[in-house]
Length: 323
Image (cartoon, rainbow, N blue to C red):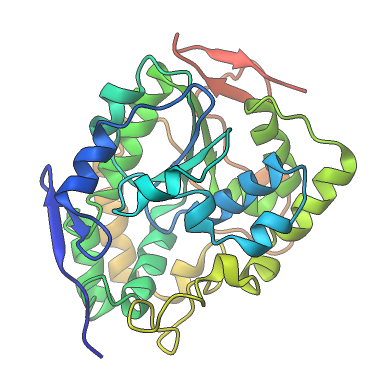
């Protein structure tokens, strides 16, 4: 089967040309956000689809109708992809928008906006493994060849969407000070979904009733989403995503990297991670034992926190949003 892996380069970052054009990327970086918009930001394979599902259900108070009938790319479309303007016309307020763009490209249009930004991060070892497997099934991405080769490109930042290190540092070091901003991790949601839903709903000023919370949790589990065609991308043509080569929703685990990394690869990763993240306050959970509980949650971005649930706002301090 022919691949569709044409590359579109924008500001020295490679993007899949099947989904991005120079026009769509210029449109994205000049987009005017509404104050009621919610923007999901992530590096690929960090929990984007999960957050799209969560916000869809949260805004509908747990009603699964939309999440069962409308594909996630139509209810929370990617800002930078070519089809975005047409889908945008059909979105009702409050709009959910998704992006993988780095902070410096969106800062000029986001700073000063009241739009809410939710940044979803994931430990980069699991990101690398998941992104590698996604490359194998997505014909619009370059052939990853061996994991060893792919990992080198990932560490060098020469994969599509650029450097994970630059992406996460850009959004969490600058975005937290200048935007209406919430930082949350894949691992945090994996371990404590209910607590994460409370944190997100508080940030969005969308309080949930107990019954709504239970419904949202039910439809946001990995099992539920992996069986939902509006989430798992099985409706996409085989020429674009070849599910015979793998599943879009593959495992959804924390620490899957341990079954892929060699000791040498892990040491090299650790060395580069330590160097590139030496000035970062971010902490990541690298694995979770099945019998471990809340002690494995990620610590707050800063210490001490003002409350258990905090958001980063324009003045750079933690605003108390506990419920």
